[in-house]
Length: 433
Image (tube, rainbow, N blue to C red; front, side):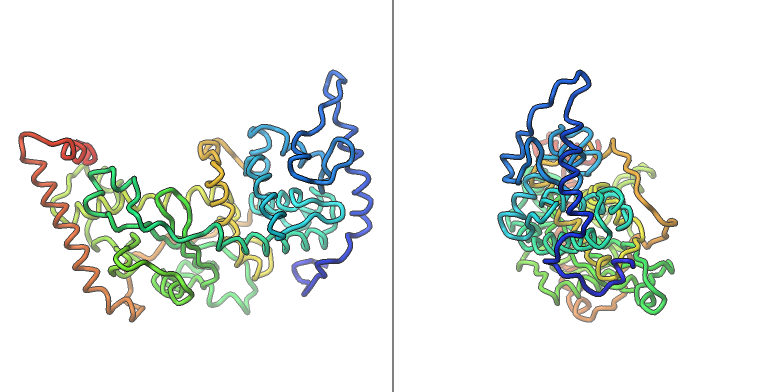
C-alpha cells in the first residue's frame, strides 16, 4: 500500500518490527565501522553531548546511524553535498525543533535523523520507497516522519518568515543609484510556478497557460535574500496579480508609505511599484543593445530591474538548495502544496545561520525527476483582472512618475556638469560609464 494513498496514520504508533531491530543493529553497525584505515579507533563524537541526543557508547542513535553521524561530524564538504545543508545548521535546527516541542526523539530515530530524512527528500525528490531503502525504515514509518516534519517546519513560518524592516536598507541608502529614489522600497515580489502531479479530476484549475499542471506561488524577499512572505496553493491558471490579491486577503500587508518592486505582470500601485510597460526593462536587453537610457522611463526601468534582481537571486538560491521545486512530484496533493513553504522556511534558516552560497554553484545533486515540464515564467503584462488594484493604478502611476523624473533630472545634471561631487561620480559608475 502506498503511504500517500492512506488516509491517516497514528502519530504515537510504535515503530514497526524492523525499526525495533534497527535500534540495535544500526549502533552496532556504526561502531563496527568507527576504526580508521590504520585500525585506530575513532574518537567519540563531540556533537552527541551538545545535542542532548541519547547515545549508546560512542554514537548517537539515528535512523541511519553511520550516515547521519558522518554528516554531523564531517566538515561542510561531503556532509553538505549529501544533505544540501551544512552540519552545524542541521544541529541548530534540530535543537530549535526539540526545544520548542515541534519534533521529538522517538524509538529508533532522533530529531536530527528525522529532519535529515526530510531535507534529503526535498533535495532529491525522493519517493517514500527510496527513503525507505536509504534509511532502512518501512514506508509507513517514513511517511509518518515526513508528515511530522512538514507540520513542524511549516509551523515555524511565523518565526522565520517575517515582514521586512521598514527602515531603508543599507544597499539602497549607500548607493547613489537607488538611495535618493527608492528609500521607501522594502523588498521585491515574484511569482513562480511549481510543477504538480494531479489526477485528471483535480488537474483542470491547476493547468497553466503552457498546458502543464502547477501551483502559482508568490514570494516576497528583502535585500538580504531572506523571504518575507510565501503564498502557496493557488492554481496554475491564476494570474500573478490574482495570487497577490489572494495573499493580501489572507493577511499579507504593506506598511503605509512603503512598497515592493514587482514586474509587469502586476498592477502598478502605491504598494507595488511596477516598471513602465513597452519600455526596455531587463538589464541584459540594454547591455546587448549597448544603449544608454534615453528618457526617464528607460532610466527608471533600468534601476528598477537592477534593484529587483534580488528576488531573482533569492529564488535562484531557493531552487538550487531544493531542486524539488523544479519537478512534478509523486506525493499526495496536500503534501505537494506544502513543499514551497517548507523550502522557504529552511532557506531562511540557512541564510540566518550563515549558509555558504558559494558552495551551491559547485554542487551537482542527482535527484529523481520526471519528464521536463514547461512552465510560465510569469505574466508579461497586468491584465486588469483585479478590480481593487485597478482603482489604485492612477496613484501608482503618479508615484512612479515622480521617482522617475527626479532620477532623470539628476542623471542629466551629472551628464553635463564638468565637475562631479562624490555622489555624482558614484552615479556615473553605476551607469557603467
